[in-house]
Length: 281
Ligand SMILES: [Zn+2]
Ligand SMILES: [Zn+2]
Image 1: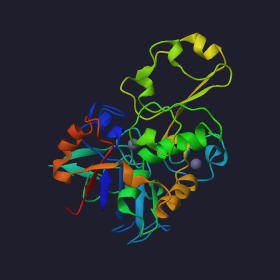
Image 2: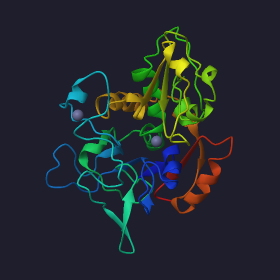
Image 3: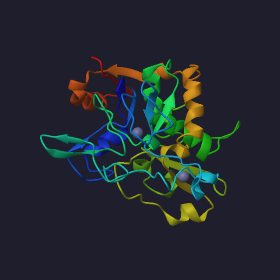
Image 4: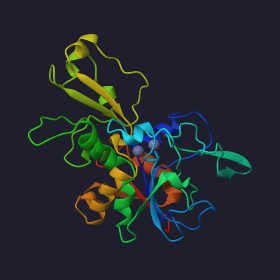
């Protein structure tokens, strides 16, 4: 790993979401250089710079060929803390250490299935590359792929972390889940409104008034902002490489890996958006 950053789902990971298998090595944002590849890996080689993607894209399954979803059937999101071959590649004092999703970027080295990484330009800014591996892209994708926001669209963004700030964005992000208290809080327009829920909420159940939905509104859940892990994320990675996004404005704090616990405290501060870790420090 070259560097990694922190996303809200890592905090949820300490509380048993998306799974309750512990101990767990957290971190699903980052960027690294391939140190070695397995015998059957043909599309990547030693020295390639990659970012982890916790969802794959086979480009052949019924979901990948559809324009409706990014949820690849062949390489799905891993909810068990294990790699696709049902192993963990980490241990601590002889005990199995679980991955978060198919990642675990808060580490000097990470083992990944080759179908769960995206190769990026080696000259990409590593901090920016780390940010697009989840948070920023999830927000950007929710606007682009899920809400399909157009010029003139009226939008509301709930949550002003990196997800909500991902572009001039559009999405109703994780805080949306905790902000709905009654029907009137589903703030989309009668008949045409659409709300996109992304990110890990603090509660597993979403209270929702029937009338809000009966009036023709749409509430849609989304993983990774609806982005396909190769075809869509590579578009974002290219824009990131050309510095078309002001990603440096998301960076508010940096900590060494050894001080990762401090990062959890920093994230509670109102002036904290993104915490970054340089693995070489
Ligand atoms: Zn697929
Ligand atoms: Zn994330």
